[in-house]
Image 1: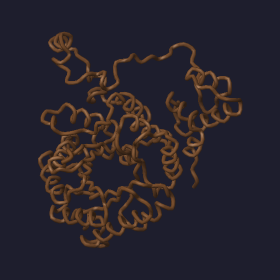
Image 2 (image 1 turned 90 degrees about the vertical axis):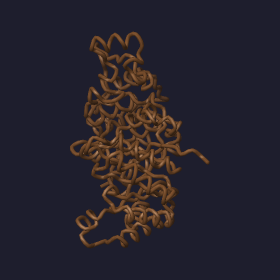
Image 3 (image 1 turned 180 degrees about the vertical axis):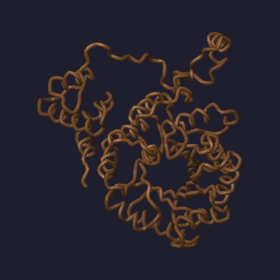
Length: 411
C-alpha cells in the first residue's frame, strides 16, 4: 500500500491577503506564486475567481503555466459552494482547473449565519450541485471545504463529507475556522473523518489559541494514520485572518525535525532552501517585519548570547541548534549599496532604467523593447507603491505580456 504523503497547500494569496489592514498587489501575488513554485509547494490557492479585480491576474497566472513560468505548482481558486458562483467563475476564468468550494457546516453558522435560509440537508444539496457543476464546466480537481468543521457535529460532518465524495469531490478541507481545536481534539476528529471518507484531507487551521502549527501537524498525522494523503494549508510568515494561519516554514520544520514525525512523509519536492528568500520577500511586500524569534527565519533563530549557549554552539552547533541555517537558504551576506544607486521607478528615464537592467545582466534586443519594458516598470511601481526587487524586474523583462495583463484592471 502506498505510504501517505503530507503535502503543502499555501493560502497566502487567498487567506493571507484577507488579513485586516494589509494587502498585496497583483504583481506581488504573482511573485509569491513564483517563489512557492520554486520551493516545491504542491498548490497555491491563488485568489478569488469571482472577485473582478482579480480576473486579469488569475488568467495571467494560468497563462504563465502554459508559458513554463511555473514548473509544477497547481493554482486553485476559492469559491462559495453554490452553483451560481461556479457558473460565474468559469465565465471570468475559463481555464480554471482546480477549485475549493466552501460552505459552513456547524450549527452555530447554520443558525446564526444562514438564519433559516439553509438547513443541514439543503447545505449538502447546495454543495453537491456546486461540485457537479464545477466538473461539468471543466474542473479537474475539486475540494470541498467544511467551514467551522471543528465546531460541527461529528456525525453530520462525516455525512457531509461522504455526500461530497459521492458528488465527485476528491478532497475534504477540515477548517478550524476559529482556531478552537487542540492537537488532541483535531487528531481525534480528523481520524474519524478520514477513516470514514477515505479521501485526502486538507487541514486548515487558525492561530487564535497559539496552537496552529501543532494542530496542523496533528491533523495531518491523523490523516496519515488513516492511510490517506493530507494537505496542510499554510501562509508565508503565518499571515492570515485574526491571529493568522499556519506559518509555511514552521510547518516544514516541524514535519522534518519534530520528534515522533520520523515515520511520516513530507512531500519530497519541497525545497527548504527557498525559505529565507520567500519569507523576506513576503515581509517586504506585506510591509510586516518578521518577528526576531520566528522559527528558522527570525533574526534570532540562530543567535546565541548566553555564555553557556554560545560556548556550546561554537563547540558543536547541534548542542543548541536543531537544524542548520544553510538549509533555509541563510548564510550569505546581505550587501546593501551605500554609494551611488540608480533605481527604476514610476518616473524613470531610459538611461537610468538601462543602468538598472545592465546590472541585472538583462539585454534588450532593440530600443523599442527597452521602451516597452521601461513603461511596464513604471506601471509596476505605481502598482506596488514601493521600489521593485530584482526578481520583480527580471519577471517583467521575461514576461512583459503577462505583466501587462497583471497591471490591467477592467472595472
